[in-house]
Length: 165
Image (cartoon, rainbow, N blue to C red; front, side, top):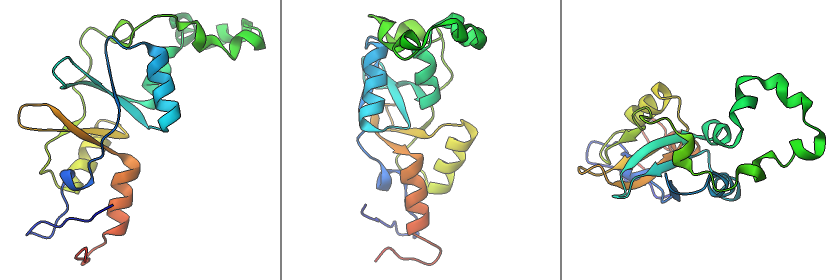
């Protein structure tokens, strides 16, 4: 990770932004789960057709998309499912899309502009309880993302008085 320091000595969101895969409301939930698992992502950003974040989903919310509603509402119902079926429930999603599983009006996505300082990035992520923040340009188009791991690593590596050199 390159530590770029601004004139005021602070790192900005753009300095720690990474290119992470995204999904759309048209993608299957199975694809979203597989993408998150294979890439070991803490969550996913759902973008609209113009590349603007529509939702930022922590991993637990992606998992929620994969669990049939009856089992989410009544977890004890899951005990009635035999072990063989309990382990493959997510494969029964068929062609359900991410959009099928999201509320009609999701919460405002966790986004920050590229010039945001790391304290503000941390505050936004904490306030939204999100392990992922979408970095957007002035038109709201996704530029990249900041994971909680990347943010904490950046804060730990660049301590007080460190010039990044």
